[in-house]
Amino acid sequence: MRARAVTVMVLLLVAAVAVFILSATQGTSAMTAKHALRVLWTWATGQQAADISVEDITIVRDIRLPRLILGMLVGACLAVAGAVMQAFFQNPMAAPSIIGVSAGGALGATAAIMFGFEFWLWRLSSVTVSAFAGALGVTAVVYLLSRRGGRTPVGVLLLTGIAVGSVVSAASSLILITRGQGQMDRVVYWMLGSLSGAEWAKVQMIWPFALLGFGVVYLYGRDLNVLLLGDEQAHYLGLNVEQVKLVLLVLSSMLAASAVAVSGVIGFVGLIIPHISRLIVGPDHRWLLPTAALSGAVLLALADLGARLGGEIPIGIITSMLGAPFFLYLLHRRREYDM
Amino acid sequence: MSVEAVLEAHKLVAGYEQRTVLDCVDFAMHRGGMVALLGPNGAGKSTLLRALTGVLSITSGQVLLRGKPLSNYTRRQLARIMSVVPQMTSVLFSFSAMEYVLMGRTPHLGRLQSESMEDRQIALEAMQATDTEYLCDRPVTELSGGELQRLAIAKSLAQQTPVMLLDEPTAFLDISHQIQILQLLRSLNQEHDKTILCVSHDLNLTATFFDRVVLMQNGAVIDDGPPDRVITAERIEQVYGAQVLVDRSPTGRPRVSIPLATAAGDRS
Image (cartoon, rainbow over the protein chains, first blue to last red):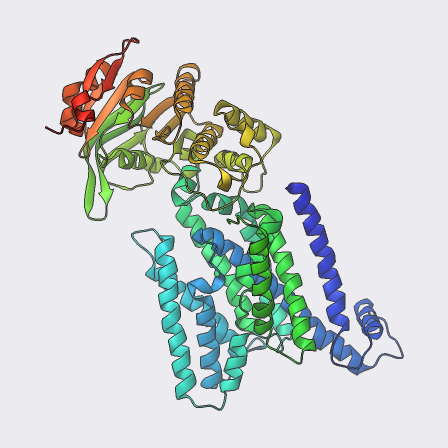
């Protein structure tokens, strides 16, 4: 499995570079791919060229690049958060949305848009900030409501997440309905997920969370494997189960919340990327986590390229419409599939 | 308190939410002891195991490991001293048999340390001892209940702990593997000085392989001694409510059999 995992990782890195170049050079402006590449090159090396206009540089540097990098980071964050949730809940259906991250983010964004919050926090819009706060806030509420005498049984956490999630979603709908139609489009677009509002400030917001999240989660790779045997077995193998779970829950909600804050609700990525990765490299998290991060980055960048070229279709629609059938195909091909 | 006691419970009371399962249990295991824990369903055997390992927090009383309360140890330290083979091993994940057994090395490995050749050798030997090395690369999701049970024992062996607790380790095994596992436990006990506590329902196997039997009923220890003293027809009837014949097998150990009348369905 190891040789295979290394091969897969190398291939994914190559794919990431390829998607990066493809995505940076394709777009709706009249620029040719070759020219875009030259723009990227001259900008990256700090050179000057007579035939490259300021406008060209702006398109590549300030529009395509941040969006591409943001998409890759969002894909990686959602995939890793999903992989952690599935091990955490010992449940193949788990995804970041299960503990209320998406519902909380949506409430934050809806409130910010509909009540017209007017503030900026370090170049981040009120929508991004409120969505991040909502996502983390609702997750914290779910966790606190699930504590039972010093423990957090996963079954309770799961059901609490669903219950609180639906209350929070109802609250979002209520705001949406009672505050009139004016801004409804914006909310709907946000809920479908989109990277069209990408900018460097958002990249700068998400990458520290991504880096911290991936780094620390990776250190817990073996613990995630052991958690798949169940809480009791994990105890017997020397894990401080409650502590490990709290760390993992905080990290994965942070990863998912930062992704939701900058891109809205992009469905299905957190659920299927971990499964696809597991089918390729097996269940060992020390290989699964980097594979999921890379495939999440590659696939989301590709999906966003489709979204851009398709006239700004919300990316969540693309991930669900293409991701789900692909997942079904994989499930079908491999007959006995367990986590 | 004996210096040699490895694991002991004093006036132990423990249970779940509203229900007390263990009611004032006193129990001690000495270094190198090999003890069978018998008792009817619901007597509190598994609960005792869980309380002894600290997975279940106790209401009152004490559990001491090497003379010190469990709370003096970290989970990791405990996992280097005690390993547990639980009753049911469910699998939801397609780790290979080898990867599964290697997880037994967890308490010996640091966060960033991957399994060394030595760890693999230890896992392989554990698999050889439990007759599971042929399963090596097979996903655990494809294995039978008995294979999985032997693998769980291999995992516990790979943990290399001086104390082993097992909850019905032979429940899903065929007769040859039952004998093999119990022989293995005996040799671990005699040659490697391991302290072994094993929950069992098989009276005959227990009588044959164990020298000390602890009998539980309604959350209390009601008898403790060599098999020929504990496994008697009166005791079995008193504790299990079943009428059986107990005589001596050719090995000299107690032998439990079911009277013909009972086997024929006569319930009088």
